[in-house]
Image 1: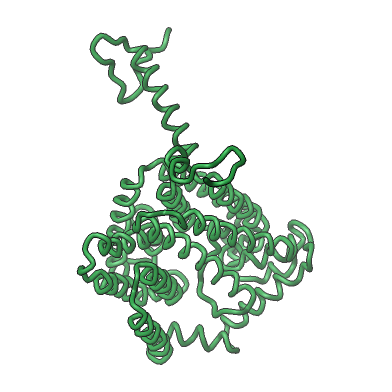
Image 2: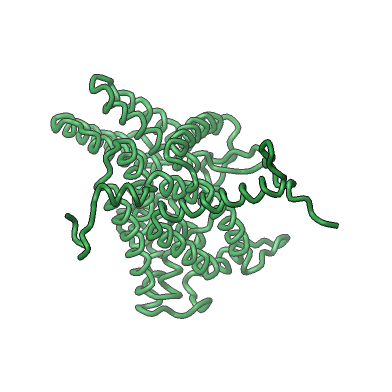
Length: 409
């Protein structure tokens, strides 16, 4: 039986047009949209993201046996590749989310980012009431699907903050700094209740970078810096989670032992590593597939592999910032910078923790560590970043014309 070409959803023939012609026109338009996307997308950034995800799959495959054996019980035995198989599934979902988000127009990406931020904050308000506690922290919601609202917030926080700060371009008298303080204060309060001191510091750092870019006066910068130092001191004195982590960093306690073990695991493989699945120290490492996956990579693939991972994160950060240098739209500059600084900040906090140079924060290594909601949320971040930084190459050519020798005229 011949297939009906008009069966394509949402395709209806125009007056005087056959169903087959309508479907063919639809397909041509789809091909045209994808061609435009391919011309406008930052392909270098996309390639770096995909490389990180491939490294993540290899890293989780190396760490999965250690975590699976550690978490197996007398009644439940996990296969060695249990976490690897789950991670690949989440990566496939994350890739679909990233590519879908990268197809969005900049205005649509902004609206979706704002909606995500608002929904995430609403979900975080429910966490203290109906949230699920894991490892002593109440950060998860189970609404049919278990997810971490603070992870989802990463896709919307920089965009909503950039949108608020960009109002200043239209009316310099608007109190955008004060409004941003209220927004960041609400997010920080909800994170502290979980407790999640690491994410609180990360979001606060992103906010500080964005208000600097938005044109904050030097006097107010000094005031904000002083307020930040005071906040950390107050957290140490009155916030148990922060005090315990800082004390553990300077020696003593389970957290210190874990970070020390992570550093020893990372160094155990030398420059070239002990070989895939041949690492031994990883078997005693807690959270080998999440918080300390870089140490597993160091033990099995070597310090040279760790150096490559760090260079890729640096390249990704520099690539986005260079792409934003000539950008004239304030929102685009702030949103792009916020998304990449948040991503890079999380990466380098995790790296410093594994090197025993920073207090343990419970943060994963972006796009490399195992995770469900975190992997999808980070892929969504990258998708929105790709959408926001899309550029029309023909407009770029008009802005920066080149002579026949390739030099700007």
